[in-house]
Amino acid sequence: MIQPLMVCALGELAISRVPYSAKETLQAFDQADLLALEYVQAERVLNSSCSVLVVNETFGAITCAVTKALAGLNDRLPTLWSDSHIAHLGMQFNADANGLPCATFVEAQDTPKGPFDLVILRLPKNHALLRDQIQRMLPQLAPGAVIIIPIMVKYLDNTVYQLLESLLGTLTTSLARKKSRLIFAVNHVTALGKSPKAKETFWNVPSLELLLQHFSGVFSHTKLDPGAQVLLDKFPQGPYQRVIDLGCGNGVQAIAAAKKWPQCQVIGIDESYMSVASATINAEHNGVADQCEFRVNDCLIGIEPQSADLILCNPPFHQERVIGDQVAMRMFAQSAQVLTKEGELWVVGNRHLGYHAKLKRWFGRVEQIGSDPKFVVLKVQL
Ligand SMILES: C[S@@+](CC[C@H](N)C(=O)[O-])C[C@H]1O[C@@H](n2cnc3c(N)ncnc32)[C@H](O)[C@@H]1O
Image (cartoon, rainbow, N blue to C red; front, side):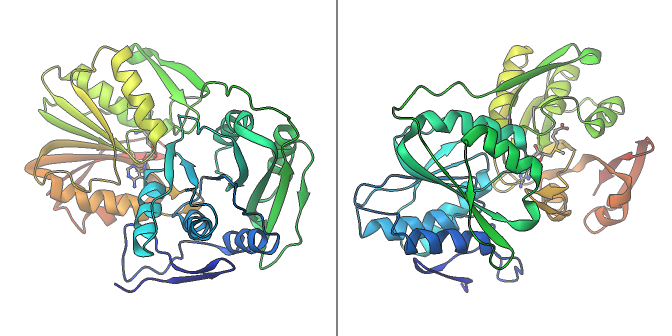
């Protein structure tokens, strides 16, 4: 296996994106990661008693570099705190590729236990998640702990800077280098505290008499996604026995399926830990827990071939800050393997994404079932 090399101030490491592909052209780390690692080395931030928390990084580049550096100093493992199962898989894959032990991983709805002396925080796109994480993280920091925020300059606007200032107090910044910068904050609180519970929001879907709970990282946590609404309005008639809600978010499609076909079993899949946690709560609160199972997974990897007669999918249109249909395409390709011969994939998508034509790579029949000015619902069969 040929893996891209990350040459950073803490050494050289093989760092890939996951799922691994020898043809991958995108890097698993960026200039802001390298700048942070250079600062950590130059300022000798790591020492024999240092406990490190890494937050929200995508494929484990920082976590692996810090694991390697700490191995010679204090043998403590860093903690990676993230909402992303793919980030978890990335960190495991890259630790393994470099012969390093795996860092401790904490799912975003749980709070890592301090005291931490150093935090390296990559900013999520979702500000509600950022606010929630910082509010829960601060009580777990040692007095004087340093928070380093590596950021690509194009993502640093007034709104995010002011949000960080309001949560962390006085900030300082490094000079920009190769379009990246570091933001610094210091924890001035003198004692550890008790972290608040993970933030939750609730809203109803009156047409289905559902009350839905959302942790802060769940897609569309403040209101029903308009695409999800269009799919609910054009829901398949069925009945079906084995249903998958692919990219389940809060579980709304899975729960609607379980309610509509009381004999069916539903698997809801998402790569966000908070989504799977919220969907599980929602199935329980809405009386369909015995029909539903929610799992963190990357698309349909590991799901039995020809095991579903219906897949419902409101696919993601970005992976964190990278906009595109790469994940949707993987979802469609894998759906073709997981559906039974007569099985159906129902997709809702923004009409400009052109899913209709793209689905024909894997499927024989693609039929438009419904639409509104923005979205189309497609019924797709082998
Ligand atoms: C557009 S949202 C749809 C959420 C929900 N089904 C709805 O209709 O409101 C897409 C979902 O796909 C999830 N997702 C993104 N990448 C994924 C992957 N590789 N594997 C599984 N789920 C993924 C996201 O976390 C998000 O919850």
